Length: 377
Image (tube, rainbow, N blue to C red; front, side):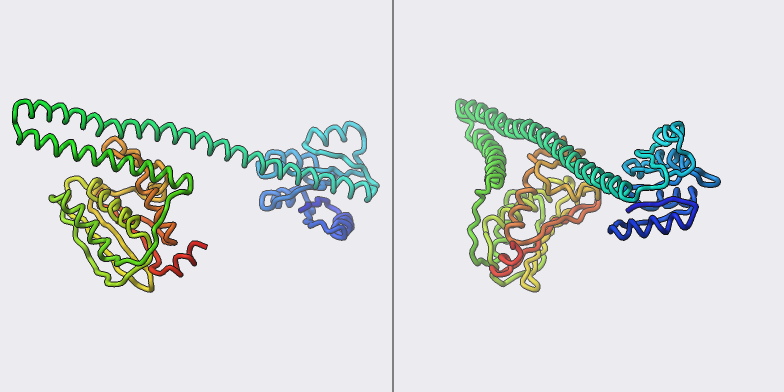
């Protein structure tokens, strides 16, 4: 849009009509003060500014406008019938003008200049957009590189911890066998098995994320009973965590369509996290029901909770809550894998949490093949 500033109405109207006839959007101001107010409210590509005006002349207006951050890309053309000497033209350029035209104005020359400024403005705008995108891309690649390095460091540490424990328990196991202490040998063997299972879980997560990145994560979609899948996950984790009470709320007798193993993986991850991030508690609730051909499943704990700011990041790849990263082990990819699994089922995944009161992770997925395909399109 172009702003014409002139204290003489006849000049404003005549120039406005000419520009509008050439399809330019035009605004007008009859004084320097009015022009400044409009510049603060609106965005202008070009300001055509009369030099000789009462109260505030064109030079003062231009100098003031040059201090407005929102008008830094706005071009200013001075028009003058009186101040045509070189010193005034020089002052116009020093005041922030990009051109100084003396009256009488050759309208064709003025139109040519306006079109040129518009073209330069568009080129600068596009150049700025490209520059911003490049900066965003660079920032994204720096952050990605940093996350990759951080992940490699975390993965190395997390993999080394159970491996070192297994080595230690095997050495103790060997000593117990040498002393023919079968009870102690059995104890060391059980502890080594627990560490090996942790190592296996970490490796499975690493393989899963590799498959996701390469687009090779396979899904075996078929009909199955949702209740059986949930019960199997609860039973397995209840046996390995006897001190926790994992309560199932709700019941579903219907069959659903999906990858039973992958969905059970999500439920197991939710319950495992609920136990892991709720030290000092002993209760986890699993709620499930089917309504309007959608399966709803939620796992609620009464643990440390997650702040509002971090809840929207919790499903990001490699994300770990900073204040908990030193207290709890993990690679920061479990929930990311869960979100990918739910996305592949055309569903949604989320969390509701209050710090120090607990968290509730949930997912909602369609129960029929038709709905899954519809939501994936």
